[in-house]
Image (cartoon, rainbow, N blue to C red; front, side, top):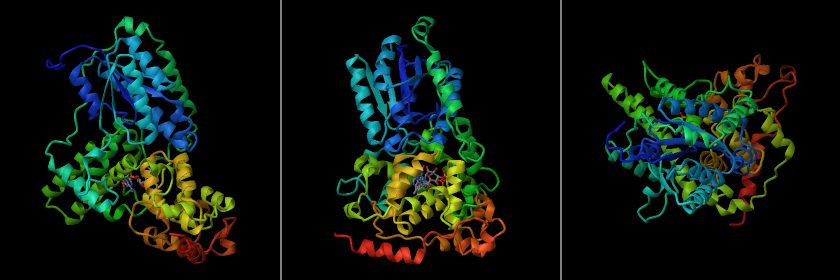
Length: 497
Ligand SMILES: Cc1cc2nc3c(=O)[nH]c(=O)nc-3n(C[C@H](O)[C@H](O)[C@H](O)COP(=O)(O)OP(=O)(O)OC[C@H]3O[C@@H](n4cnc5c(N)ncnc54)[C@H](O)[C@@H]3O)c2cc1C
């Protein structure tokens, strides 16, 4: 325990999307002030049962959350203190808890989502009304959203210039984004403080969540819950002989290959911090340099760093433009005459469109709670531009299934695919067959997720042009890409501007 610590006031640290002890910025600040810190997590029905207006949280995320919390609780015990699990409304429960424990300060890390920010305002007001202080900081981003502005003093709307100034900030403050160690030698609650509470209720709720999350794809999901698994995944991706990171470009585009990190759920729930990810990339850079530095490996690391910046770009966009959560950024898209054919939508959701690359991706999502990024772009373009369905139907479907479902990244990805977002390119239409031939040229990905088509020739898998005898019950394509593309373009051209 550090002798610099000034007091043994009891502080609470409220975990939300930062389910780790290491490199947790507000937690580290709390521990600098006092060793008597207790962790709290609130199982909030407003989030678990109605995630961002898209209905209950995806079973895959419930699983990831419950398992990560169990591990986090064990880490708090090993550090000398404990994690309390509560169930209900944080604005009611936290003021009650500080009263019961005689805590003086509640610390947490800030959120970018509109509902989360509003919840935090309500909780802060309730705590202050109870005579307590709150301490907040940014943690889930390498660069806080308020820190970057254009020359005109505006938030960034375009990724290219955002990336350039983001990179300048990240690399320009030596040590500024170095990960912090996990706290240790904390002071637990006293026997009297513990007697004040029914500690079993929260644990029972967590046990119920672990049992009843309803996610059947645990063995297929590439994202692993908990801080330890995130660190292992990061290390396997970034270091060792020739780690996948060195071949990220072009490996990241081939869904049949494990060429990406699968750290999206870890970054979403904060079992990994973005600074830890960034530091691993910097370590990989120096390993490449020591080994005589292949230019492709360094370029690959650079591309991965840009993906970390995409994540932050969408989060700062949502922070500055909360209206993104409600619909298209570009106003003309509010008047687009979506057809929203329920039969086509259902075929897309169930992976029964008759286009193998689409159906393979949608079945990967349904079975594993995750989908490769290349395929997310292909199925999103197909739903919007080929099936002429409102992108918000796809956005909601993704939120109901993704283990990494995240309002900022998901909304950003869908608005990018629909061409309704901030991205300056007006109309982006993917041809699913061309995409399959470029990115799954041997058909391995399609055969993995569509075992009923394992016998079909690769060229036919790619085109979707499968003979009647070969289909064996697999549907014919529900639409013709060329016709639908022309139709979509005509509808777009007729939009009043
Ligand atoms: C329609 C659509 C919806 C999406 N929905 C989500 C979502 O709900 N949650 C989510 O985390 N990502 C989402 N993405 C972005 C991306 O598909 C995933 O982050 C990525 O597939 C996760 O795999 P990975 O961890 O192996 O990524 P890697 O390729 O290893 O990238 C590293 C990390 O960078 C971030 N990242 C990478 N690409 C993007 C991107 N385009 N936008 C934002 N962050 C990115 C992720 O945190 C990712 O874990 C979506 C993309 C599209 C096109």
